[in-house]
Length: 238
Ligand code: SF4
Image (tube, rainbow, N blue to C red):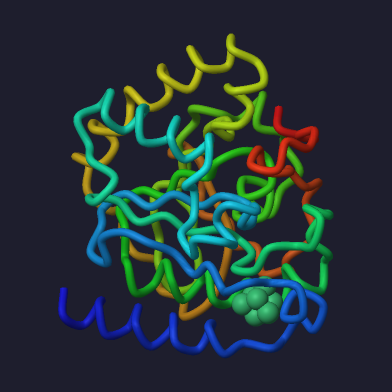
């Protein structure tokens, strides 16, 4: 716990001074690194901060965040028990799509976040984070609720894609799918972490009946999802 807190704090400090993406540095109010328990068994990964997150410095505090809290309450988990982060730590101006170079710039922060938090389960919220961490273009509609082993940085976790909460805000039938998928999380956490891959830095997934496959290609830019906090249309959420 102390080690995780120190590691997370160090990474946070590095990100807060990060100037790798000049346009985002110029437009951001602050870096939105992540929030929650640094020893969490359950970690969520979304896309990028929206306007509210940029203002408050905390991920998932807008309408999507409220729904995420509600979904967690539904499975008797409090937000304070989980860790929440995004692929990009800085808000793209005017909610424009994250650019491939920005994703590549920021990806090692996410890898190292997963390493220091060392969760059992990483839940990817929506298409963007799912395609990035799976290094695969399969859409969330096809893959949601299916658990896979995934190696992120040096940590092997159960990867569990679900719809982005904004998708449920825009299409209410997706809320039932989200609730159904969330209901599986307590049992998934109880499994404990998968056997750790003997790799120092990699990315890849496998279903439980497959041999391990490690994908080391640099992050590609998945089709982006907007956030719901600016009242702008949400694209590619489904
Ligand atoms: S998005 Fe990530 S890599 Fe880019 S400036 Fe922000 S913290 Fe740095």
